[in-house]
Amino acid sequence: KVLRRQTGGEILPFGLILDAAFTSIPEAALHHGLSAQILKLFTISAPLKVLRQNILARIPDKYNNEETIGQVTCHILVLHKTLDEVVPVEMGRRVYRAALDAKHEGQTITMFENNTVHKNNVTHHVDGSSQFAYLAAISSLLDQTEPVHPPVLDPKAKPPTTVSGLNP
Figure 1 (cartoon, rainbow, N blue to C red):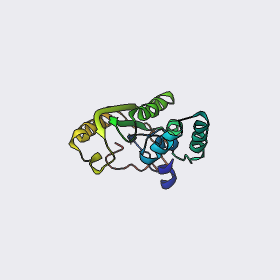
Figure 2: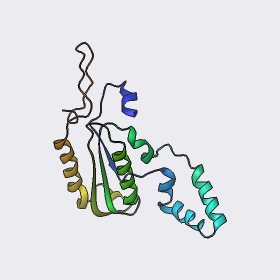
Figure 3: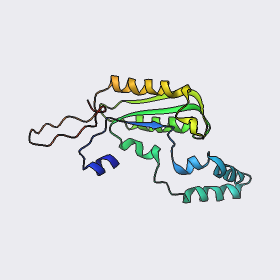
Figure 4: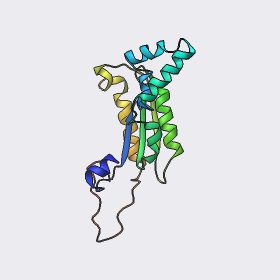
């Protein structure tokens, strides 16, 4: 939606790559840093559990990937490290399953899991342990698929702009 809104619908994406996809902001808060430690305290008793649910319900969730992934009509590749310490791999799997449940005609939906650790540090994207495996997964997606969006059939219509290297 964002790409179409910003370009007036002229650029059609070939694919969407999600790296360590989280399901929603409130759920991610349960697993991340200090917020996870604080929210864990609210599981001691039933009244505190109710308070915890109320706190989580009040967290704005503009980025609920599990709910909105079905609106994506281009190809989807979900990348996730199975030993991720920041975003649990199960979140990525749930986003992937939600995408499969809403799969559009011609769409390819793939999940690639790499058995490495993701810590919340600067080496996340530059460690050699996953860099080449991720590039191979992306290359495979590009090699095996055709664009989902059909070509413009009206000869008078302006064809969609393509991003070099993404839309053949």
